[in-house]
Length: 435
Image 1 (cartoon, helix red, strand yellow):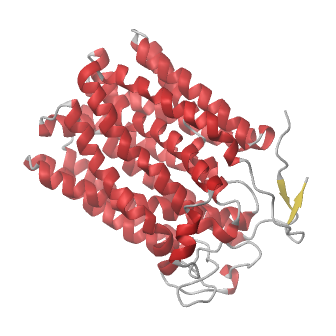
Image 2 (image 1 turned 135 degrees about the horizontal axis):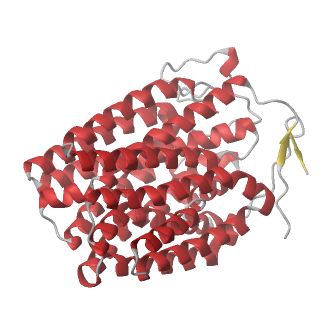
Image 3 (image 1 turned 45 degrees about the horizontal axis):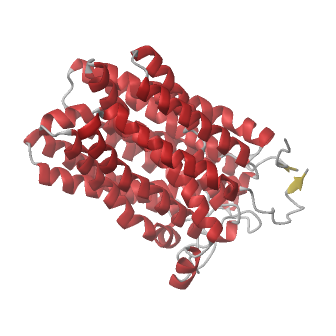
């Protein structure tokens, strides 16, 4: 098997880029904490509203609609106000949305729950695109592939969020108190971290400048034109539409779509599938989600070296095969502990599709912002289709059997994985050496 040639830096990465990498990693972590906190308390949401499986699927669809409405605008928003301000603004919107949601669950107001979820989905979607774009900026400045590690940070956050969620559910902590506390802490952390983000190639005033909240640029944080990612202030609507006609970008989007559906289905349904499928307590359902997230986190931490050794496309295919095996084991075996082994295999298989898709979208720094926006939008459509479809099926065949439908997107991801093959690297002899 021929591995893809690694990029080797001829000089040490600048200190400000290293600080930015840790800042981006931390933002990914808190995003994961917030998402898993919500997912871990879905049984409480269901019980509080008295919803059926089909109704839960439609409820979760509301947040996905919010994300899909907002995501096509993410590239233009980030190019105008910067990745840092975008992260702060939409993390704040997500905090408001999920706070409204949980308070409405307590009050038994399903319509207000849906309004909150729509706002929360908008916030999460654009926050996600912006932090991935900043990850691409840092990746270019460091001259090495670090996107899987950022997503490992997200997974670490989901493990922590699911673990705390299990404890909160077991201790009977009120849903709204738990979720509101977490999203407010997340927002504070994001406000601190964005001060260390890398500058982008074009600030809103047309000059090279920082995306940090102060909007200032110091000599230590001056963008290097050779490595900065163009976030696209100069891009027009015509450029955006043209990106939607790029066959490779759309196929990479399908890779991310398959990965997002495989990962998102676990986040949404594993807890409920464990609880209802094996007749166990809600806390055991949260543990099932934690098993998935732990396996995905470990695979992402190991992923960078594996990708360097075997290449992007072979690792995508290996992960797809593992995800398929894991889903089949979880859905079909009658024993809880064996099903949890299947969940672990599923988690490992779902680990690399999303970060590798984002890396593939960012291969050309000049169009990274537009392509990340398109790929994110295509990927998030999984959260539009998945919850409703699986909820509908679960109403008729049960949660575990409904999850067998994931074999379809996994197979799709295997078929189109070749589209993620790295583009030829742009010559940059001063900073990198191919070999």
